[in-house]
Amino acid sequence: MFQRLREDINSVFDRDPAARNFLEVLTNYPGLHALLLHRCGHWLWKKNFKWLARTLSTFSRWLTGIEIHPGATIGRRFFIDHGMGVVIGETAQVGDNVTLYQGVTLGGTSWNKGKRHPTLEDGVIVGAGAKILGPFTVGAGAKIGSNAVVTKEVPAGATVVGIPGKIVKRAAPDMEEALDIDPARREAICQKFGFDAYGVSQDMPDPVARSMQAMLDHMHAVDERIERMCSTLRKLDANYRDGQLPALRDEDFADILDENDTGCPGLGHTAQERSSPSPESSTTRNS
Image (cartoon, rainbow, N blue to C red; front, side):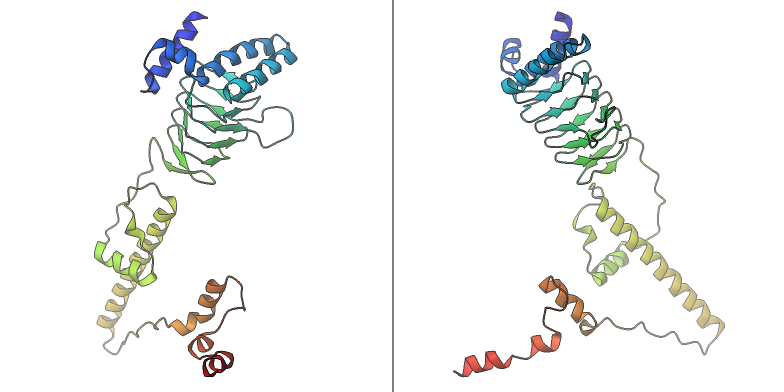
């Protein structure tokens, strides 16, 4: 028992630079208090003293602000930093060297009995306010960003952010095919379509921006291929004349822009109405 206590306290020193000495950690870290009380409650739960285990869990929540169901399985060197608002459900399983921050929920999405809560493998880090909901596994060494909502399995070593959670980094990332693309021309396509894809770095973990960049790169490749086809046709037939693409006019998108301005289809003003004053407004000005 004392060896496990020493392990738990040493894990605090390893992961919290604010920890100064043994006595301070033992007396002032609610995450450690909640863990010690949970170990007692879990032992009572396994011995079928259910009511006493739940009562101890309730006392722990009142004392620390951390709610851990006595049925949850917690591994070694588990650390909850700050801790307020952490909730861990009955069938949750937490491996060794796992770190949680304040406001984390390991919850369920079903009212059926059985496995309802997530399994966190060794070395997982869950940021403040994150919600992991459902009976799936978060792989070893994965990182869950603050305030993320995760409802699907996470592979080992991945980083997940956003609502709903999206994987932005893997331990072994997929190999990307190198594209022969002129950066200046790609930037011109971005300007043409009004998308500032390079306001952020390509190394930034933004899955939406990355998807848009892939679409623009594909359009770039298609554009170049069409130009080569037209050039070949001109060589084969001197009479071939490639026409210009039709211009994009603001009038063609007036109704769509109108709906975006008002938020309701058909309730905004048309381009002609916006350009000409209404009779009421002219009457008001004359008066």
